[in-house]
Length: 140
Image (tube, rainbow, N blue to C red):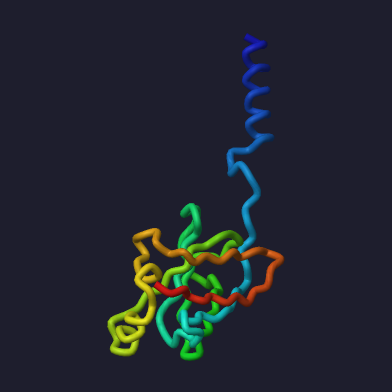
């Protein structure tokens, strides 16, 4: 009976020492990533929402509103997905306003279909890399 208690105590000690959490270190969220979205002909995209969908789908997509000059800021504030280091597929979402409906016609379809995996554009966000990225859409 005493051997059983010693054996159980050893198992509990090993379990407590190794923990029950994730198998690797948790990535630190990036404070802020900014950048600019350019259309295939080089002019800035003047409205819409940039959606960065994590490659492999291991975390939630990160979104940012696109300003009139094509700039955006990914900040991962309260209630939003954190901006984690990694590879992301680039997509764009537009509302039904007249300005954004017009923009939909100049943005290739492959960047507007978030449910498909047609986007051929990706960005990689690294802890040590620049926090200012350029997203230039490709034709067709």
